[in-house]
Image (cartoon, rainbow, N blue to C red; front, side):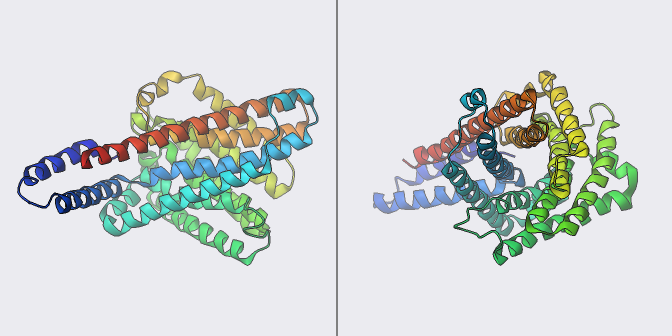
Length: 380
C-alpha cells in the first residue's frame, strides 16, 4: 500500500514536456507545471495513505512512557555500574519526545482526515478489511499514551480538558470493540478462524491501554471494565491464533513483523493489571514471563522475517511498539523484585528499544525525503 510516486509522476512529466513548447510565457508555464505536479503528488499520497502509518505515532508515544520510566528508574537505582550503562536522562528530553510524538500524531491524523474526505471509498474498504480495521485503534491508543504523561505546564494533572480528551479517545475504542467483537460473537467460530490474524491483538491492546489510562484518571471501575473486556477476548483470540492452520496467517509476507504483537498484548496486560491493583504482583509477573517467552520464540526464528526485511517498509514499526512495551514491563518487574539480573534485563531491553525506534525514525525520514526529492527533481 505504499505510494508508487516515480512511475505516476513520470507520466505527468511526459505529457507536460510536450506542451512546454507551445506557450510563450515560460514563467506561467512553470507555475502551472508546479501546481499540477503538486496536486498530483498530494493526490497520490492521500490515495496510498492508510491507518497502518499510525504505527509510527503509536510507537513514539509508547517511547515517551519508556523514557519517563527510565528517568525514574535511574534516579531510584543507586548502583554506579548501572548508571554507567544507562546514564540519567534529562527531564527535558522526555518533554521534547512528547512534543515530537504529538506533532507526528496530529500530522498523521490530518492526512487521514483528508483521505476520508477525498477517498472515502478507500477508507470504507479499509474499515471492512480484516487487517486494516485493527489499525484504526492506533491513533486513539496514541492519544491515551500521551494523556498519561503530559507536561505540567501544558495540561495540569486534574484538568477537565484531560478528562474530555480521555473520553474522546475511549469512546471510539468501545465503538470499534462493538463492531469487531460483535462480529466474532454473532458470526461464530468459523468467521473468527477465517479473519483472525496477529493484528487483531491491537483491539485487545487498545482496551488494556484504556484501562491503564483510566486508573491515571481515577476511574477504577471503568478500568476494570476495559481490562475484563480486553482479556476475555484475548483468551479467545490467543487460542484461535494458536490453533490456526499452517499458511493461514491472515497477513502477507511483508507484514510479518506484526507477529511481534504476540509479545505486546501480555506486556500491556501486565502493566494494566499492576496499575489496577497498585503493585506488580504474581499475576503481572506471569504475564511478563509469557511476553518474554513469546519474544524469545520469535527472535529465535529469523527466517520468518527474512523476506520482509529485504526492503524498508512502514510495517517495520511493528518491531518497535511491542519491544517498548516489553521493556516497560521488564522495568516494572525489576523494580518489584530488586534483583541484579532483572535490572540488567530491563536496561538491555530499554536500550535496544530506544535504538530500534531511533533507527526506524531515521529510515522513515530518509524514505519520505526521497519521495519529496523525486517530486522536486521532476519539477526542476
